Amino acid sequence: MIKSLKATGNQLADSAFQLTVLRQEVVDVLHLPPFHAKMKEAGLFPLRPVLPAVMQINVGKMCNQVCKHCHVDAGPDRKEIMTRETMQLCLDALAQTDIPTVDLTGGAPEMNPDFRWFVEQISALGRKVLVRCNLTIIVANKKYHDLPEFFKKHGVEVVSSLPFYSADKTDRQRGDGVFDDSIKALKMLNAVGYGQPDSGLVLNLVYNPSGAFMPGPQAALERQFKQALFKDHGIVFNSLFAITNLPVSRFLDYLVESGNYAGYMEKLVNAFNPTAAAGVMCRDTISVGWDGGLYDCDFNQMLDLHVASTSQHIRDFDAVALAQRPIVVNQHCYGCTAGAGSSCGGTVA
Image (cartoon, rainbow, N blue to C red):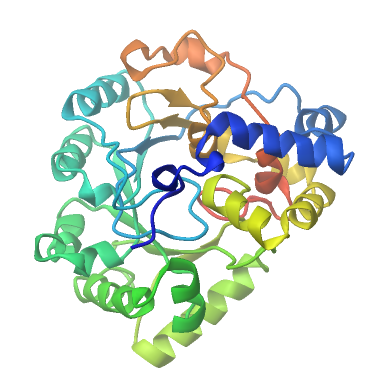
C-alpha cells in the first residue's frame, strides 16, 4: 500500500519545510516577486475578508485512497480525526452566525465515525451541507453503500472528485481501479436522483490536472465530461469544477521529484490575474481543522498558517474579530490566482 508523506518520514510532511521550499524557489531561485508583493501591486494587500458564506470543516485526514496530488497528505495511515466534542464546538459557532453553507471535507469525511451525526446536526440548524466525496468510499465497504440515500435524505450537495472521464488518467492520479469504482458510485448517486433534472439533488464533479499544468477552460471541460460520461456510462451531473493543483504536500513532492517545480511555479506567477485574486475563496470562507484550529482556507490549514486573529480555535470563535483579520498569504496562493483562478467551487474569474 502507498503510504502518506508523514508515514514515510518525507521532509515535505513538515509544513515549515514546505514553506521554506516555496520561498526559496519563487524568491531566491527564480527571483520572482513574493505573493504579498504581487497583491500589493494589484492594490489587494492586505487581503480582507467579506461576509462569510462558507464554513469549511476538515473532519479528519483518514482516507481510503492515497492520491498523488493530495494537498492533505491523506490516506489509510492518517489517524487524525475530529472528535464529536470539536464537532459540537463547530455547531455552537455556527449557531452564532448566518453562515449558510457547511462544506465537509477530509480525507474521506465519511470515514469519521461521527460523520452522519454531524450532518444531521448541521441540517437541523437549517444550513446547507456540502460533502466532498471521493466516490470510491461509497463502494469501499458495505457500511457506506447507503450513503447516496443518506445524502438524499438530508439534501446534501455532493462534490465528487473525478480527475478525468477515462480510466487511464484517473487511475494514474488516484490508484488502480479508482475509475471503475467511481463510475459505480456515480451510478448509485444517479439512481437516487443526484444530477437528474429537476430533482434538486446536486452532484458536481471536480477536475484536477494530472500533471504540472493548469486546467483548461472550465466550461469546455464540463461539456467534454458530460458528453463522455453520458455516452459511455449513462451518467449525468450538474457542474464541473476545474481546480488548479496547489504546490502543497504530495503535489509539491511530485513537482520536486519530477523536475517540474521551477517551471510550474514560474507558470503560476506569470499567470497572476488581479480579477481572480479579488475573488479568492478565502475571503468568504472560514476553514476549521480536524483539531478545531481556524484558518483562512484548506491550503493554509495544511501549511499550519492559522488565521491572523485573536480567535484561532473554534472554542474561541469570534465572528467580529475574524471579520477584521487580514488574510494570511504565502507563495502557494499563486495557484488560486493564476489564469481564471481556482477555488473549491472551481474558477473565479
